[in-house]
Picture 1 (cartoon, rainbow, N blue to C red):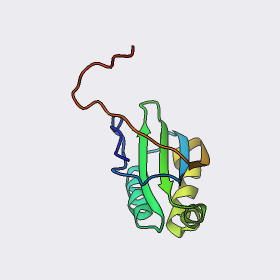
Picture 2: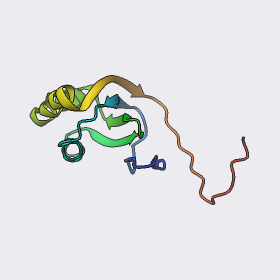
Picture 3: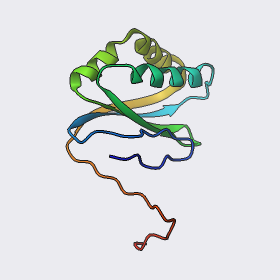
Amino acid sequence: MGALPAAEGGLVSTRLPDPPYYAVIFASQRTAVEHGYGDMAERMVALAAGQPGYLGVESTRGEDGFGITVSYWRSPEDIAAWRRHAEHRIARDTGRSDWYAHYSLRVAKVERAYAWAREDGSRDPQP
C-alpha cells in the first residue's frame, strides 16, 4: 500500500504491507507546555521504528493542539512489547504530567486497506 499525502506538518508512512495488521490510534490534546516535546516525539518515532513488528506511522496535529497519531504493528504482542519499553514508559509518564490535557488510545485490527491519490492535480469529479 502506498503512502497517503501528509497533512500540513504531518508524518506519513511510506509503505504498509497487505492486511491484516494492527493500528494503535492515539488522539491527544496538547497543553501549552513545549519543553522537550519535539525531541521526545522524534525519539519515540525513531525508537519505535527499531522495534520488532513496527510497520510505520502517520501523524498530524492542528493549530489548536489536537492531534492523531496512528502507528502500525504486525501483532498485538508487538504492541504490548512497545508499551512496556522503558523509554516509551518515560515518555508516557511525562506526557501525562506535562504535554497532554487528555488523550485516548485505541487498538484496531486492519483487515482491509486501500488508498487513492490524485496524480495529475486535476479537480475531483465528486463535489
